[in-house]
Length: 385
Image (cartoon, rainbow, N blue to C red; front, side, top):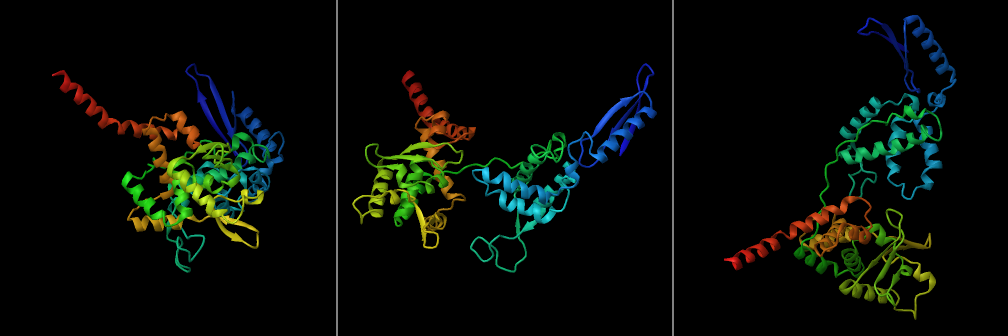
């Protein structure tokens, strides 16, 4: 559809601006000295759009969102290190709007769907589990702005290929261009105070595997996924005593960490208990996880260690409440390292951070020195009198 706008300059010159819009194509505009020429140009452009001549994006009027997601899952998802977050988010787009043509997706429509996601309620994926609602109950959970942003990011990744390599739409027709994100707010990571940490370790000591995992996390500031992916072949308790090699990291880069003191002793005792019935671990045993879950006879391998329920039970016995208990161990370790003089670059090397998130720990460490500075300056003042 063409729209015309007549302009009159200060010197009295008249011009006609024309813009042609059609779903699946970027807007096309031009300026002419009269409306007759503008209409002729618009008719040519509209015909070219209908026939698909000179325009990439003809496929955008044929292909659906479901087509795009299926191709993305077949071609792009296998190349990603961790595509788990795209599972349920893309399922929602498939089930709700799978039949919609990709050329009909606009920024305004995406904004409307974002509001639907934010205001709508949903049910847990596993009815009957501890973290799920009882079977048969109405949906009662509401998505946070951060979760809604993940839904939008998943489809945005798909449209990056729709308007890129696949050429279903022109690059300039990507509806996600200029679409803002919902404000998520700053997440303030909590750390365990000294007394709380002592209470927690007193309770985790009743479970050797959980206790060792907790101590190593407090010593290395490692993520839970990195520790659960650690195998005995990457743990050195010999010549380079206490060295851990993390290969399966969040950012894909290998990292070395070290454990000393209580954590190293707990790791040695735990290692001895795992391999006490043999003279030395075999190559097959060295390939097993340091913190394994249940053994699956069907798949002939260990499952993922479900540490979280055990950690929550330990916290409950200790009378503590921590929203993200394991991630708080990482915060605790980073804050302690910063308090002992580690700068941002050292923290990034130790904990595997890539962003400037470590600045918060340096800032916290600077706040911790406030009392020290006050005492020091008070002493100088007294000596000067």
